Image 1 (cartoon, rainbow, N blue to C red):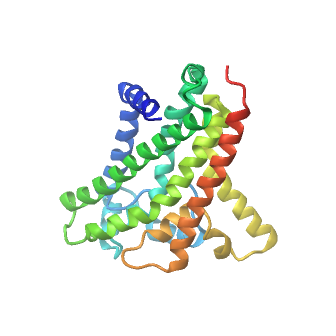
Image 2: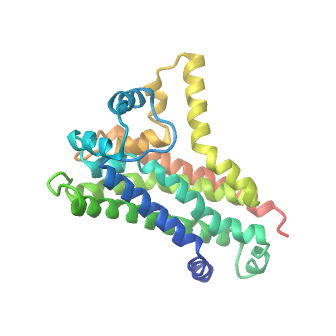
Image 3: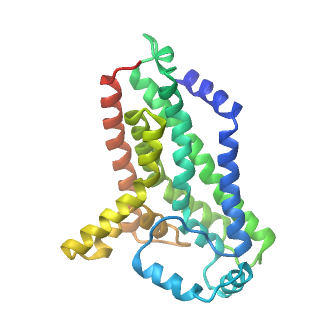
Length: 274
């Protein structure tokens, strides 16, 4: 397993893709630091969306954003942690470069042998995806934190321990999402299929949840608390949070890890490797 991970690390860092991915994370943090407002990609809950529209309806220039954000009571680093759902898109690339490259180029058959089982190969890919993904999460967290201290008001920041605790709270659900992406890459095999499904996966799940809420007249708060971006936002609170909120994040993450790993290994053990 260790040899597979080492070989993949050498291959990945020899290419340009990983550096573009790292640069994109740094760029996203830099824009948030400059505007003093966390960016957001994807859907959000209706109340948060309406609040954002009311607050920013008169914005015309980046300086307007900086002015409004500067008057906000929310700490920027805490706000950036609330929008860590944006990291889903760099994580798509991580799973792609770790898993899809081998499967689409058919080099996987040269790796799997009597000494390396399919299960070992799968878990090596999963652990490497987690490792690289956690590296990006750490980079985003502390680049945003220290960048905010350097370029904005140092007194308007959280304690570094609080930010670290928020990051640790979010890791289980992120590992769950990465596990789903590894499973998806293993099942689809083809680069085009994987990208097509992975890119819209979160947004599609949000739209389906909204549809269920609308059709069955279900309390939106009851269902949305189990949605990926809602979990990320709920965990990104400086100070203590409700035990229920923490358990939802941890159990959802563990559930995704176990469920996707079972499906991924089951499929990979039975698929024809060409």
